[in-house]
Figure 1 (cartoon, rainbow, N blue to C red):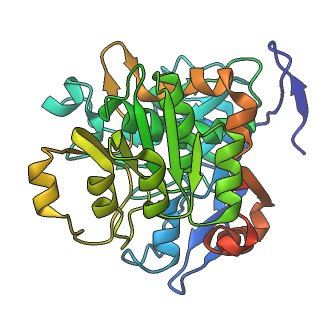
Figure 2: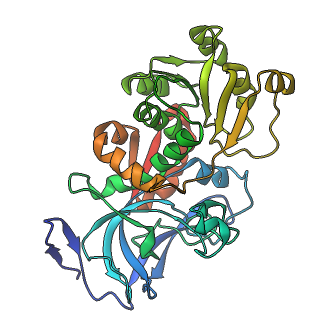
Length: 359
């Protein structure tokens, strides 16, 4: 039996000598679904930390695997949007047991030119836990101590799973150079599109419009105080008028034609920030792209620019806009219903935006 103990910051956490115990974990099989299996509870290596997982979000990248758009992930333990509690620090780790944390799942080598410049998202040896390394869709996971971001006391530990998608939006907004007074168009009404409303506003945007296919998404965009929530690029174009948008943030990817929509919607000399994960080559309206001198910038996960990392900025924004950020979570499931959770996340007729699993 694992006793519940009150820690110094008044959070409740479970602690026990768990060496040799088994935990439940969700693992991809070769049939396009996940199996719940028993795995040994991992021991943290020196400098690493074991985290007791509170919540894991299902991401669009996870759905690419689920739909078969990416090579089979059979055998992989997914889950890269993770919030939890420090359970056991490894040797030399400064982490404190019982601390509520968000897990930054991207880890570089720490030695190459890109890592030393803060661009660990470009490291040739990078690991993204849950995508090309063991993830957090389990009762426990181990990560480097440097991957942990302490949550402010007012933030529930399960809300830590929302820091990762919020950090993606922080980076896309920064690379798009959204600034004071900017007019911003966001293409896509999923989690990344909706949270980009918050990051654009935080960066100083004066006007934010969203293109979202589904009614539930448009309603949520309005609730997050978007100036316009549009069903199509044509509708957004009419609302923006001939001046267009200063910055377009593309969040759809897949096989969509959204980069073409973005180039047509942005003003001359404007910026298109591409957050969507595309399954193959994407077409661009080359003449418009050239004549308007559009700047297209790709955005990959998160990194560190200057004094603050995208992840640390996201933690602060989560604390400041907690209820708005949490409002994108539409469905919650226990780990034993992992396949139901993926079906709900993939089927937008359910009204799903962010689907979260609670191991």
